Amino acid sequence: MKKLLMLDDDKGHLAKLIKELELAGCVVEYVKTSQDADAFINAEKQKLGLVLVSLNNALGYPAVRKIVRSAGKQTQLCIYSDSDSVTLREWVYKQDINSFFTAPHQQSDLINFCKKIILKKNIHFNHKQLVELAKTLSKYTEKAHNLVQEHAANSNSIQELQHKLARSLTNYEHQKNFLTEVQ
Image 1 (cartoon, rainbow, N blue to C red):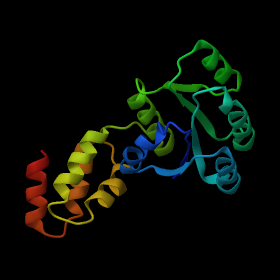
Image 2 (cartoon, rainbow, N blue to C red):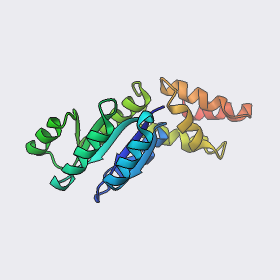
Image 3 (tube, rainbow, N blue to C red):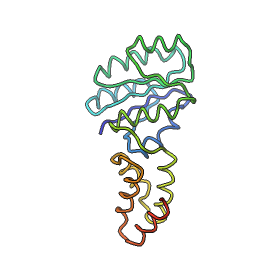
Image 4 (cartoon, rainbow, N blue to C red):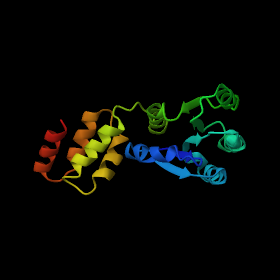
């Protein structure tokens, strides 16, 4: 599975998305400086699927240019910004970055985009459903969060995920009770 690199600025917009993406099965690396992002890109270029950059003012332009050069054509880039200015959008598109999302209005669209790119498929469940499954599963096992994360990336529907989670429980009564609660 490819990794997702998040380069966040001082506003911390992307930090709020990490748990949701990890719960869905994405492997996320979070950095706060362009130097750290550049080092990670150079070290993990073959394993990198998406670079997500939080860009909220012109001070980030040089960092984005550097990341575009480092990442190359095989890695997709995406910009997340609290500015929806035409000038910013035009500049982003001139850098050959075709994915731009506005914070916080397009947060769920951004999350679905990341999941689709990293997990290479359409996502059939949302963060709220995953959290509820983990909460219910935690009644039966201490590894609930890890199990949801592990199986979510490889499930094509919420029903398939529920059954995989039930099968991961060793006790038949727990399996039956879990499925009864979630369905």
